[in-house]
Length: 109
Image 1 (cartoon, one colour):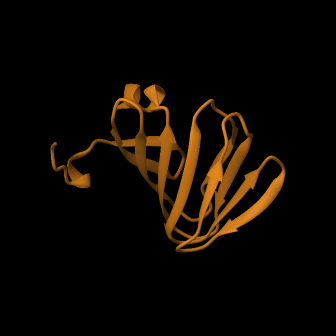
Image 2 (spheres, rainbow, N blue to C red):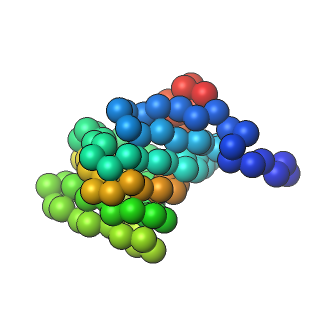
C-alpha cells in the first residue's frame, strides 16, 4: 500500500476548463476532477459504472435527458452506458469513482 499526495499525480485535461488527477487499482479508478465555472463536459456514455460526488461548487448533470443539480454533499450513481453531460454552474470539485478501471484515463497520464 502506498500513500500518495494528490499534488504528486499528473494533472490531465479532460475538456476545456476540466482537469483531473487520477488514481487506479486493478478494478477501480478514482478521479479528482476540477471544473471551472461555465465548463462543459459533452454528452457521452461508457461501459463503466460511475459514482459522482460533488465536494465544492454547483454542477448541472444531464443524465439520460433528465437534469440533476448537484450541490456540495450530493452524489449520483450513473449506470453503465447511460448518456450524460455536465455544466459547471460554479467552480467545482468532484470525486468520480469508476468500475471497472478507466484505461482511457490511465493512457492520458
